[in-house]
Length: 198
Image (cartoon, rainbow, N blue to C red):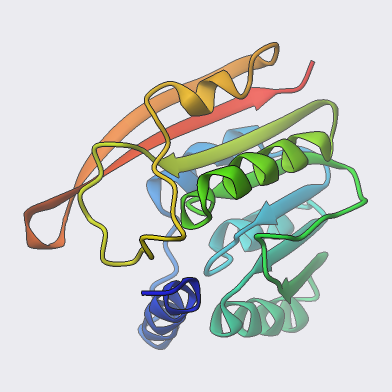
């Protein structure tokens, strides 16, 4: 699979979820809710369920994803509900923003980039936070055996402790590791960090 095929993998999944009205927050999005503050960037927003929750609770939200189906759905809901939410399709591997945010959310995205790109984008996202702002980052780690959605040339399974190490000097609010069963007897191993910029 190529990186483009990874986008197609999720675009197809999102189309099915939209058609079946599957809009529940996943466990990582639920964990982020208590930490949302101020202006929110949802980088790799997927279906946009977290972005919509944030906008519905009064946050100004900017959301990006590579899935046209997900972004079209998000834009439609934002228009219908007159929410303070802007959403756009983007190639998140190279994207650079100039704006500042109080919360930056990046759940389930960085592992779809090669490792140098993933770490560079993480550093960029960290730089977008105002002092006191909160980053919510979730990645797949070594130990993951469910590989069907990845390109061998274009993914990054973080090493144990690697994500946490990128937040040296930050106030760590949450650090959790979870494993979940995946299709074909495989496993998805996740690392989540929620940290406040000092």
